[in-house]
Length: 270
Ligand code: ADP
Ligand code: MG
Image (cartoon, rainbow, N blue to C red):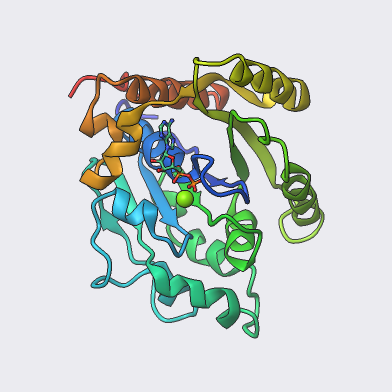
């Protein structure tokens, strides 16, 4: 491979957990931005009608084509540049909610995103798909399109509740629509050090998922919550924050687990 050329390691990762508010969108944006700043070519796909990934990357709702039209067979995937070099976005808005029913009568309704991504995946090292807090057709499309699933877990008492449903869905999909589907890993999010509860929950999660749990833990950090209202990943909004450092560390851990070194060190400095 000539120096400076991109290694071929295209990987599609669905970021999923049917619980809301566990850090799916925050992880998708900031992990993707950290990978892009480590010289990986990254595409993020918004599959949540709430469109938080889209707005969190500074894209205003309403004007552009979205993933919705493409899923229904009207045109190609719209791909937009984001504020981060090497990071591209397939946007969504609230119209995507209609796809949960409009896809039902269509042929290959669970494979629509997979087919769309097949046409672009060789342009990227990583494609991260943000999913809605449900196990409906939008999430199913993401899980059928993906090579692996990254599961964010909020370090709180009920973190493991409902996970049986997700694991059952994953094994069902693995047995039928997407036999190669694997778990990329589990990320502990919003870890607070004020109480012992977080540590205890983290221990339980590590017992359950063992080596699948990333060593990097994402702390509760207000900068992570503020950044989306500025339309920026935390690495651009406050590169010195603990949140930025954590997502850089997570991106390095993901790269090394995948046998790839960052092409250049993702810097937490602007
Ligand atoms: P999901 O996509 O799973 O619904 P979000 O990523 O939108 O979850 O996170 C839910 C809320 O928590 C958002 O307001 C987000 O800004 C905030 N949040 C997420 N991660 C953190 C964190 N590590 N520290 C502080 N706030 C966070
Ligand atoms: Mg979300």
